[in-house]
Length: 169
Image 1: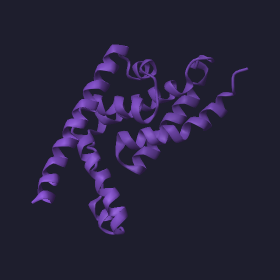
Image 2 (image 1 turned 135 degrees about the horizontal axis):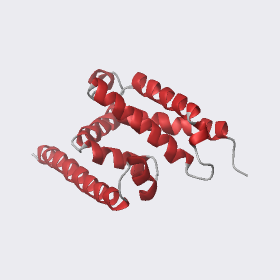
Image 3 (image 1 turned 45 degrees about the vertical axis):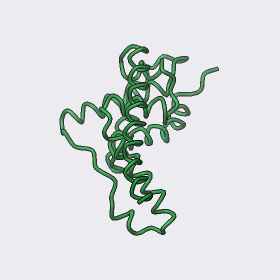
Image 4 (image 1 turned 45 degrees about the horizontal axis):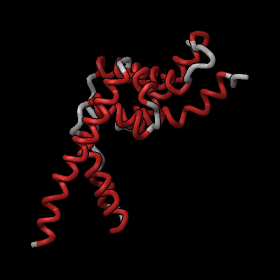
């Protein structure tokens, strides 16, 4: 027997929030985006087909709202706050520096590449579900993921080379 709509909705909220944070790069906007997606889903509850992928349906709603807002506001993604990094202990700072390096490398990817890595890599969606969410072919998703991973690897390696040279000197 399928789970009630509200139960499915409650279970997917943390995943929606994580996806929204990756898209918005701002905690407050992510919360607003998640809330908008939940409200829209509740209004469209009768349109959901039981037995289909609820999580993919919700991610599609959230993604569509995000891009609608992006077109309306044209807000830019905000970088990680460097001041927060300077107030940490040395071990935590090192981890945060690696996270910041990854974040900077991640931001060099195209929006489509970032999105598929978030969906497939971080959120655990299958290529098929990611294709459904993005409204494109499975082959397109596979290609974007492959190119994004290669680009990310190349950028990260390029960032590590100067650091390795300065330590050897």
